[in-house]
Image 1 (cartoon, protein in one colour):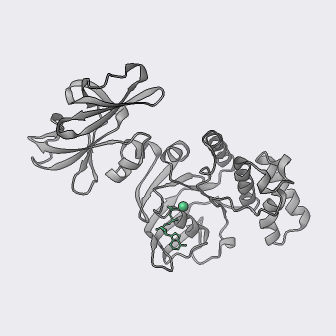
Image 2 (image 1 turned 135 degrees about the vertical axis):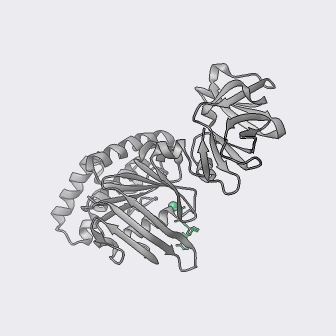
Image 3 (image 1 turned 90 degrees about the vertical axis):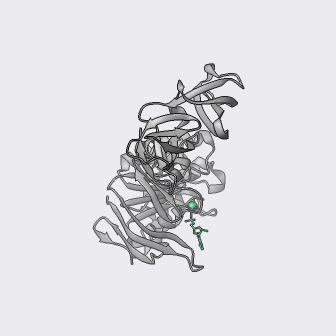
Length: 352
Ligand code: ADP
Ligand code: MG
């Protein structure tokens, strides 16, 4: 077991793309850590840099007490599962799982017995003689995990481990991964572009953009207090309301309503009000608008109000309380749920 320390790491491709850009990150021993961000932000590259499959152009990677920056992948004590699983199609599950040991020239019996042991832990025992083409997506995922786990490792790296699974299987696989990680106690970094997956699984999350970490925190911190409007936009199953507002006489004015006291901000300061649809409440003193869209989300409905100046504000209500289209409603944020961002650069200023 081991912590991972990434210090000032940059990774550049031969075509000049700087996919990881001076990044600092420390993953604690035994942690289940998510790298979350939109496609192309550098998640896979960072994972490959930790694994040693891409060289770091700058900075250092330390695993446990060892600086592994210049070590080849096989010497880093790292197991990696690739997004497409990368199983060998012409080999059986047993041969696939035993492969890393074959490369290390372990005796044939050891290859087979290790494959059997790891496969049994992942409920694959019945499938050892099948080829990948004869497995479901979830079984292929477990076979890829088994292959990664066949070699003793301190660190497990998973690139979008659940993205090839259908919705139902993905939920099952989530629970399975979480339990496996807990049982093995392996320091695990998993990549995802799915914020719900990161929130549900991870001990901590790094939200990435353009090769850098925008925010690092627990799922709760990242959800409740996104540190800038980029993260605010990215996290949440319904998008956060981000409304243009201005400070007047010590109050935030937004879409024709006075929302919060901000005595420390000068009149005329531009701010962006952030509030999640789930945290808006009906309140006659709040922002007023007409119901323009109602979407049924199942247990709740998402109601969009068209407010003064054309601002759109969404809130969730219990499904049975769906308002009629065209109705007038006024809403305000529940206490502590209103976030204020600087209009200038989108960074979090305050919450109310
Ligand atoms: P993510 O996994 O977050 O989608 P990647 O790490 O795959 O992002 O890619 C980060 C950036 O590096 C992107 O701009 C991508 O186009 C670029 N990139 C990825 N792989 C290569 C490569 N082998 N050669 C050149 N550029 C690459
Ligand atoms: Mg990727």
